[in-house]
Length: 171
View 1: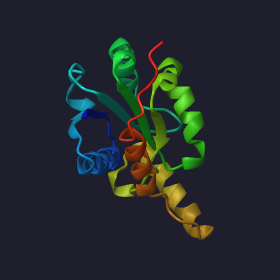
View 2: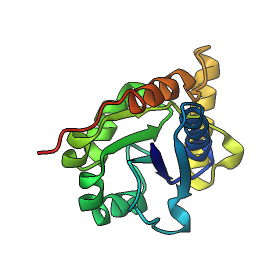
View 3: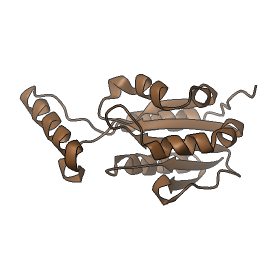
View 4: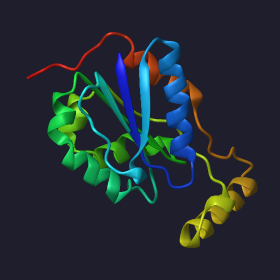
């Protein structure tokens, strides 16, 4: 299976998750190319599977990722397999974030859509995001809760689903 992972990353977490996913798919025999959307829109032709990943800030994915999905809608719908992932510090909101940010038509046609967790690194944040990250860190410490983290088990399950031989249904 020839796969393309298109992603956008603000602080590096989505890039990290894309790389982990790439390695897991390669271990299963897939040929994988990772493309950062910040470098421009990659060519989508010639892939059996196209995966799109995005960070989440304040419940939203970047507008550039949304533009990529809109511009590539037909190619994504005609691809054998599509899948989507988000990186968010609030995994309980994954389904809501997916439904509010990704075109429903693409989600319904995908093999899978999931959240890979997220990380909060104050040093990689700027402006208001840094302020919010600092507040979150203080709350986590106050309530003795766990800091958000990348969930490799979710990436593993995602890779298993993609490699299971399941293709999306063509209407």
